[in-house]
Every structure is written in C-alpha cells, then in structure tokens.
Image (cartoon, rainbow, N blue to C red):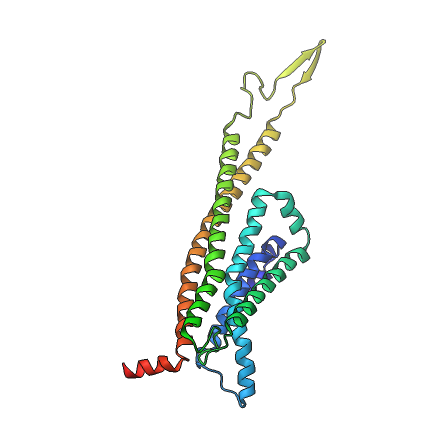
Length: 273
C-alpha cells in the first residue's frame, strides 16, 4: 500500500504489477492465518463447514492467480513491445485494465470449480486445503492437474513471452546504439560555429544546428537508458518466475501432504511404522 501511495507508482501501466503483489500478499496472509492452528475452532460444525468451504475455494483460487497474474503482466509487456498501438488502447482507460484483471479472476474461479466438481473433492481436516478425497488416486490426479494448470503451463508461457520481449529489447538497444554512433555533425572546417555565407554581396549567417543535434543526442541517451532498464526488468522477471515455479512446487507438495494426513489409512500407516 505504501508503494501505491507514492506518486511515481500510480501510473496505469503499473496496475497489473500491483495486482501481482496484491495476490501474493493475500496468499501469504491466508497461510499466516493457519500459523497457530491446523484446523479452525468454532462454536458449531456449521460454521466450521462454511469457513472451510470458503477456505478451500480460496486456496485453489489463489494458487491459480499467483501465476495467472504474472502471465497477464507478461502479456501486457509483450503487447507493449510488439504492438504499441494496442498497448496504448489498453492503457488509455483504467477500466480496461481492471476488466482484464476481472476476467483473469473469473477464469481462475472457473478452473477451481471445474476441478472441484469433476473430482468430487472437498476440504481436508488440516488447513481446510482443497483436493481432499477418500481415494488416494483421485487426490494424486487432482494435484497433478492443478500443478499443470496453475503453475507449469502459465510459467512456460511467461518465460516464452519474456524471452521474446528480451529479444525485441536487445534489437532496439542495438539499433539505438548504432544510431548514436553515426556522425551527427559536419566537420568544423565545413560548418564552423561563426561561419557566414555571402550571397549577392549580402552577409547571411549560416544556421547553427548544434543545439538540435545536442538535443537528439540527449534523446538517444535517454532511449538507451530506457532500453537497458527493460532488459534488466525482463531478466529479473525470468528469475522471479523460476523462483515462483520452485516455490509453487514446494507449496503443492505441502498441500498434498496435508491432504494425505486427513486419510485414515495415512494415519494408520504412520502409527504402525
């Protein structure tokens, strides 16, 4: 919230980036809510059932949104690199960007409900995590599909998009650098600052283009700085996505372990060993 408070971060082009941080924040808050207890303690079973049903849906929804928000941001950057006119149309209104975010949440919610009712799953006793079933094969199938849809496929798509963005940015940087190396001024002998031209016995000063050329050099330098910043950003996003894949895989393993602990056979195996 402090970042959004800063004036330089209120640009419409940064809304999708703030959305990525917002989703991650909610995900961390939900995990922190179960830090001191493994299952909710409420006065009636009805309240526990309602709370765990909401928690079950939110676990799955946020699992999808963590990578979907990154994919949406990557697609937005890709459009900015390859179709500037479309990028300007999207960025022209804040409601268009919010509409993209709403559609992303609806897709994630649809996948959550489709998986839940396709496998007939419910919440587990521990942390009210989604994907619980009395059959082990259904639990394994549920989490394999969930990992592919919520993490593997979006992450591969994000990496491909940023690779293409990186290629485009490098091409732009090379072009800008070559343009700045071309000679922008005439030799001093041909165009001295104080040279004058005699036409029909009249002395006319030759226009000095040095101010314009200096401005062009400054613009070129700013473009190089901007392009270098985009290169660093693309590399950072690729690293962030790699970390996200590893962390998501780790979290899915934890969720799978928590769901298994709700199976009677699992407890029986632990006690006999």
